[in-house]
Image 1 (cartoon, rainbow, N blue to C red):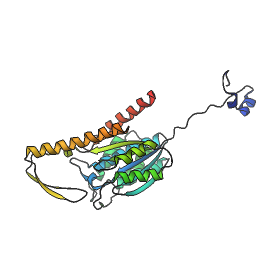
Image 2 (cartoon, rainbow, N blue to C red; image 1 turned 135 degrees about the vertical axis):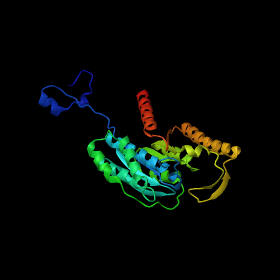
Image 3 (spheres, rainbow, N blue to C red; image 1 turned 90 degrees about the horizontal axis):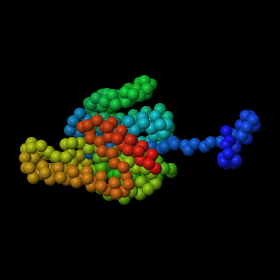
Image 4 (cartoon, rainbow, N blue to C red; image 1 turned 30 degrees about the horizontal axis):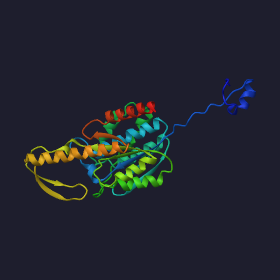
Length: 289
């Protein structure tokens, strides 16, 4: 109903005539968001020291974000990338579309012989137990196997440039990767000026250092280069640990200075807690604004 002080230009004359007293229109901002998942499927993501690889942890995070988007009636899209953009699913709304996004991400989370796929899906079911039964039933249909792809390097900058071309409007971009790459920071900052970029770094405890196990042959997952190292050397183990910690701290510092949020998940640990902590932090920030 119209009250003194309302803008007369917002009066709804049709309703006013029908009700016999003045009514005004009330406008509510549309909160529909566009969410795009950039999922790193390069060879370094295959590493895993426990029950799942970094790639599988990235897939679980993608599934959680996709179901969160459809719960909020947002648009959800997917870009799988390595050295180049491999597959792009434009953002759309709806449960069927979100399930397609999850299916494509799952296809890249399978092992070469399919082993471990069932365990991955069981963990996702346990994580998503609160979903409606209709969603859970459809989620069971997502199991299938794909062969492991040849070695692929990581090129985050190329994936971000692709997003800049295909996203005409502001979107929330989740970059899910181990960030074992160089030369992407300037592009990341540029994309963040137009979109809301969130970096999800996938790590593994074993990457932080070695135990004493004698001579080991290490192989670079993306280049195939090999070298023999002596893990009995305390100096070498300290150097490995220091390099890994420096990489983590440098990434965190650079993103903080650029105003980009960082979520860090460990493939050996549950991923739901870091995600919930991030969402609560964003909610508190929105209230302050």
